[in-house]
Length: 444
Image (tube, rainbow, N blue to C red; front, side):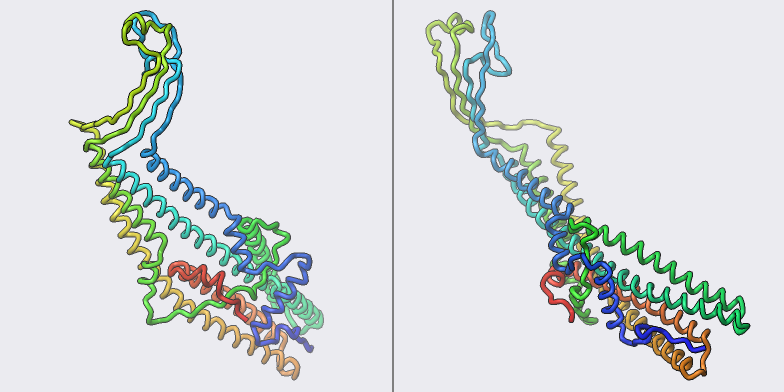
């Protein structure tokens, strides 16, 4: 019996197969608008919750810095202390009874306050580094989700064709069984092949649905409107075997810069706690409009007046404060801890970058091996088909070659995406991710 595979399965060009898969997916969806990778990333940066949280943290840090800075601007408080007086006028809420009471206060000289202010400013800048790190995380998440979705969609189209082919083979073996040529074992093998294809197809459909939902969450677009364009994914730059990317990662890592800024801020807070034991000077001014029904005239009959004001500076000299001594020691310990954490972060980034670089080199080699094995399996499938055409081969040889070619295709897809995943992670580590994702032209 002659049995020929569809022409698409006899092609040796993987790129052509993937392109055909994309075309079929677009034709199947039809109504969806194409979503290039760059637009998906920009939407994720604009609409993502992670970006909004990072922006809010920057605003909070800046507000904390302004709060301390504004201590040098006089605070103006106006109020009234109306009340009934029996005997000598006592205070109401810490101030003598008055129709109108206006108080202005501000710091003039406070050695600890200046250090706290500097620490808050550093925290503000550190939050900006955290925002940049979060931005890179969003870009990485979106890019990998996009690339993996492209992988599963291409696999889905391929598995739909594989399923049709497996059913044809199963039907042919069943006919051969009726003719007494094949056995029940051969039929069960054909059924097993078809069942495996259905299993892979269900896995691919489930993974694609989850990834499309996640991409919808990132971009804010409806799930039904997402149609990716795999050709918009930029080509990955090669990794040099001789270049040590650890130094580059340490120099550009937002995580390291954040840790260093935090260490510097904690050191300034330790100095601030210690300087809290030094003298400080504050400005104070107060105006009060007294009333005549609070017995002031009885106790100050000759010098009483309705309008009263005070302005001046207050000097505070701490003499003994055991609690503050302990607080300054705790702050010093926190400064040491933050410094060591910054060193640990620097070492961790260097080590992880080196691991990623070596892993990328290994995965590039593994990807090449998987591609060559897939091409060999394609050649074997074509050879089996040629023997079928020449009536010198068997249907079982063709089926076995078909199964091996399908398995090699799946292995190559997995190896290719794993290389992309590690390579994108390495781009983030070296600070080149945004340039690659948003600036580099797409591969032709």
